[in-house]
Amino acid sequence: MKGVFLEHIMELIDRYLQAVKFSLPRAQRDDIIKELRDSILSQIEEKEAALGRQLTKDEQVELLKKLGSPMHLASRYGKQQHVIGATMFPIYWRVLKAALGLAFLVQAGASIVNDIAANRSDEHMWRLVAETQAGYVCMHMQGTPQTMQLQPVYGDVLNEVRQFFVDRFQRLKDCGVRNEQIIIDPGIGFGKNPEHNLQLLAGLSNLTKLGRPVLLGVSRKSFLGGLAGTGPDARLPAALACVSLAIAAGAQVIRAHDVKAAVETIRVTDAINAWSREITN
Image 1 (tube, rainbow, N blue to C red):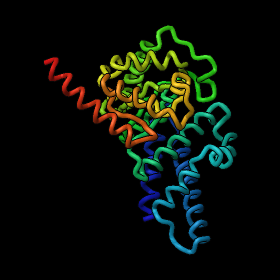
Image 2 (cartoon, helix red, strand yellow):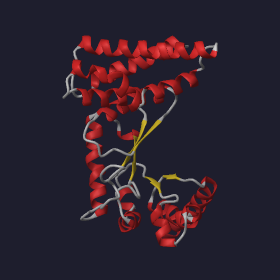
Image 3 (cartoon, one colour):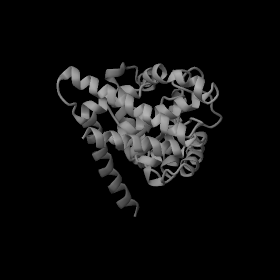
């Protein structure tokens, strides 16, 4: 199992390194793959020796995820900066992190990549999404997680978020991601103030008309607490009001903490919507 599993991971990474925008010489790419294979095998063998048994596939995946962490990559591959060059190394590191992390997760059975950083400029993650054919949640965020809530500013938040997705559709297509793989998420609370969030919710049908499933995540968000005057654990009624309106506007995926309550809300909303369409027709 270990040999086949590891070789498939290496094949995914090798094919990805060939697909990224900048090119590496074949010899250098081979060196990277050999270094990764040797490193992963030694880590697995060390762990198995300590346990006195073979690792299960799930245990291998957990170990591989750790090997793909930024801290491990920086400590292990930082030494190659003098070989690759100061300019190329940051790019190389991002490629390696994306390739390791996503290849391990997809090989382990993950079928969807939830990308909160779809506003990135580099294409490494998208090309690996195309390679693995995983589902892809494209989320809008202004800024970074560290800066997004400092002072979000929009001229027209609904049109700007809509145009962001239109632009991303083209970039994803250019990277080989099929339209059928994409789900869009307006990113409620990610680089938006309470008014921005409400405007997006009110105009959600403009996003559902883009032709891709819309995912909405409002569960326990702080802007709901500001409106309802409640703490995180008491925001369920406010969140369900948003869920009902989102389903009526055409949203197809809801991210929720309180799954049972969300499912019941969706069922009732769907039933009302069905009668609404019947009456309209």
